[in-house]
Length: 133
Image (cartoon, rainbow, N blue to C red):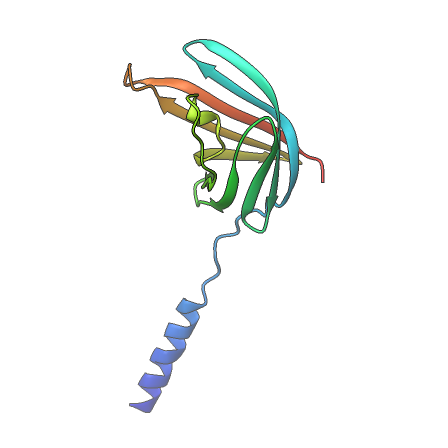
């Protein structure tokens, strides 16, 4: 009976110690462009963001400050902690869920949003960033 208890405890300990999925470490300063395509109109702006210890802050070309979390299917979720009062496209704030790709020292974030008027995917947001620090 004692052996069964010890084996059960050992099995539990081994399963509890499963490694987390190997998620990439994105810490660094990234600089590049932020592209939007809304109603077939494209805009391109310079953009810079610092990712450090699961927190982010935008330095140029956008807004956003707060924590971020990597998901398991190449997605990342940013949670903006700032307060805004202006009437503008809120999707230009780095917040919400994005698909990401890492290519060498480059990071690409993409999000597609359905526009309320059409109900179909009508807005595309992409950050093309290169790690500079």
